[in-house]
Image (cartoon, rainbow, N blue to C red; front, top):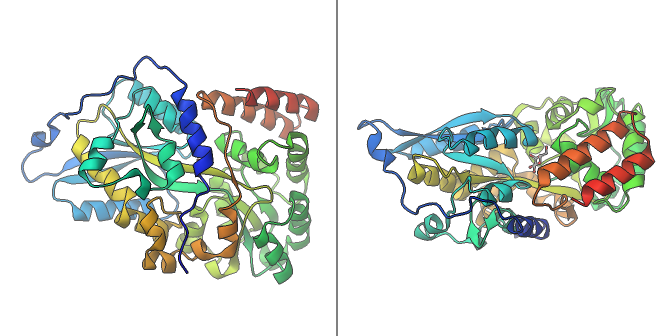
Amino acid sequence: MKKRIPAFILAGFMALSLAACGTTPASTAPPPASQPAALSAAPSGEKVVIKFAAQGDSTPATQAVLDAFNASQDQYTAEWMDMTNDSGAMREQLITSLKAGSADYDVVSLDVVWAGEFAAAGYIDPIDTYMKDAGLSVSQFNAGSMASGKYSAKQYVLPFFPDLGILYFRKDIVSAEDAAKLESGDYTYADLQAMAEQYKGQEGTTDGFVYQSSQYEGLVCNANEFTGNWQDIKGGLEEMKAMTDSANTPADILNYTEGETANSFIKGQSVFSRNWPYQWGSVKAEGTITQEQVGIAPLPNGGSVGGWLLAMNKNSANKEGAWELMKFIATEEGQKIMSTQGGYLPGFNATLEDADVVAGNEMLGMPGFQNAMTTTIARPVSAEYSKVSDALQQAIYKYLSGSADIDTTVTAVEDALKG
Ligand code: GLC
């Protein structure tokens, strides 16, 4: 079967890039086209180190891509500067460094929700010329990811990996009838709650459903999903609170990020979990359960669009090397490794049709995953996204932890969404 290029991210990311265009930061002057000749600084025979600031990866994929890059290179060697997995905290880490004009990182990984802000602030370099010289065009990559890093008619990013929120379930526990219902996407959070209650305890599981409820960016993604893209704020948050307070979620669900979620699911502790595609790779890499035990479904009201992008530090002393690394990770070879070893959704369109990828990332062909790609929802669009996100996180977390009532919370969420 021919794999379709996911059109799911386009709408949301288009909007994100447009929001970024609305800002008028002081430093948007294009950086000089020519780069410092840092290469000649390396002693002959030694490779120039290209520093890549990227979040931790619980799959082997990122390390494997860097190993493959290094093996392919005479001139450069990539070094992974392991960053936090908390998107908001990583944004701050990067801003602190880039704002100070530091050259500590050559290539940076950026969350789709704040990449436009980095371009607008002049922290990263446009890559149009590099792309042209390499014979690459924007249309070869995931459209939504590319759009989220386009600013003032210039392209600043290549996709590292596009993301979408999906439901993982234990196929060996859930009945065939319930599995079909889940995969179709035709179910509600109340149905999920009932199933979590029904199946919890089977095959040694201790929890029904795990997802992200800690106070950080992941909470915004999950609340976006529970509320159906903020269409039903009251109903969705009440559903989330009912889930929090029930015996179907762990007692400390309010501390759960993607890490705790994946850990629970891949160790066979939970029947259902909400996470990003990488959890498929984590099951393969380090699961006590196997991929045969896992089913994939759309979330009841759609999955949040996410993803990470690659960009070049404007102050990098090794821009040619930075580009070589970006290009390697984002095109055939890199994306193939990301998808087959990490479960990631490829951001280079041709990779979706690569026979090794089709065979090596079984999830991409699963009907539940393909349905999930058609029902994605974007997070709020704002030139000051991190402020909106912080306000949402605070209001929702207060409610879930029992220190605010629903009406106050709905008002606070509505205010936050006004940006
Ligand atoms: C994933 C998504 C990213 C999102 C984050 C929230 O990394 O790719 O877009 O912001 O999760 O925790």
